[in-house]
Length: 231
Length: 111
Image 1 (cartoon, rainbow over the protein chains, first blue to last red):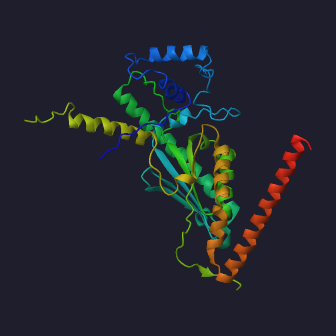
Image 2: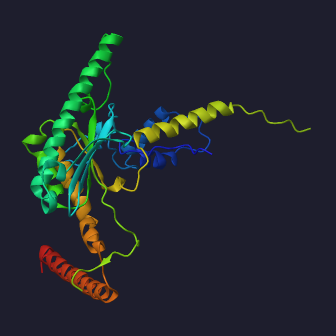
Image 3: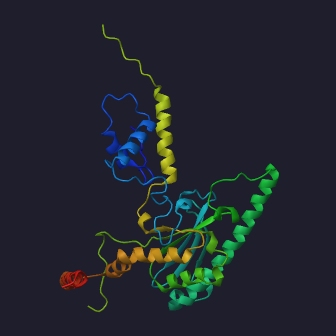
């Protein structure tokens, strides 16, 4: 059986007041309209039986959670219309692997430390991770540009007069897709990848990033690991 | 004779209404997976902040430490000694924190 979902009440709704005020309304009152309630509350406030009311500007708008930073989180709830591709960065003790997958998870491009010309122990170094990242960004850039071209062609074919103004995420308008960056492992390649994104090489990629996550596997109980090296 | 109660609403329309409510909520807040807690939404143009927030989550949940500890098997004696030492250090720091807070309180309200 489906349960009916009741969304949580927000600060802007004066819930406690209505609970309090309802107890003042006689049980057999015919007037249960909001106006009757409001006027009753106003009269009670004037006679100091109820505490002063917040009014329409009493509570901060539901968008600003922190008064200092005032980030408007409403746009996070806006849907990101374009598909979100995944950029997996696996940084182990022996190697760094970067994989770009479609939204369903099937891989499109894969690069590793060895493919960038580093061999043996150097595959897991910072430099190898950085070069993997840089090459991957180039591939992503080319893909995004080709996708935008095909989208433009489709739009021309359908002859849309003007794009409808949707309340979507602004980033979805500038590119063909979004990217979710997923880290795995804590090798040196992880730092290298992060640095590459935040540096000049990641200029094109940064505005496309929609979310960032970590998928390092953690055992809960699990199998016994190898014994300590110098025991 | 008791008359059978006629339902006032159509069950199909009720199902549709309920389905719409639930599916709208799901679209707005999709169900999470095992790694949802370690996923951070990026505000436009604030990639560095998102990385910092992710780092904070990992630090508070000791993810990196856990991975390191799980890499090699820790024998029962080593584990016991490590936990004993850690628990004592936590207890000690908590006691010191309480004393210092008490002193601050007394100072603030005036001796």
